[in-house]
Image (cartoon, rainbow, N blue to C red; front, side, top):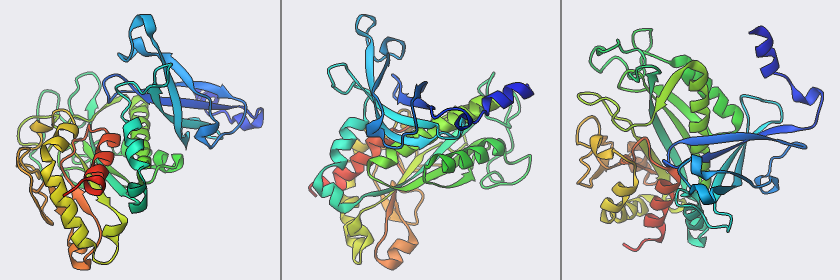
Length: 356
């Protein structure tokens, strides 16, 4: 095992200029992440200089067997925390051989929205709070929970410390550092209300970069959990009953909101969101109706609401923003399994391009 460890951690720069590039893409479920590696002649930091590649889409439920080739386009490059050195992780999106985005490629439409001149001028910033739950691999029951049973009620676990309150911290800390190494703007972590559930935050990130970074952070988390023999679930309500669900609260601001008088722009944006509530809910993640019940720090899925410092509202404005008269707001509706390309671009489309 010692020799295996040494070989895994070989520094390629000692003997060759070649690097390993791990191409990552989103599979047919819209949530599963796939990847494969290739050798390149030398270091690359610009995705435009990377070659396109292909994969068997019939094995990912993204193409028929008689026309199975799907082409992946490199879109964002990150340092590889697993192989290290000059090796890279590459976030890709998927197209037909004719160059058309396949149905599960949500990045394509998001990029069109974020390339709109009106959106570019507003420099939309996002900070996404990604919640997730760690599960025991063989029984798919939350980490730290007794097999076939339940822990004590919620209360001591949120930001808790101790072997009877925090389960999986080694995975969480490894993920934190790996994301920083990769170049992802991860801004913090914390234990969540339900035991075995954690959160990390990605941002601030501008426009399409928010989606690229969140997807790659999920990939890195899955890889680390794989090494640890633990399963990650992004299900918005992994355990029924009196247990908190898992969301992906999305903090958002534009240049106009961050400038003096921005609170009025924020209120107008919230009004626009209220008018498209059903459309946003439909795009904010599968199974969200099990989470947005009006309990456990959520608003009811059928009713739009907003308030200052109100964690039971659809949209929350922070006290500091209210006091300063400018800043950002938090859309608390997205589920933990949401597609960040869809959510971030939809918020920009509604608030910047939409008519009140």
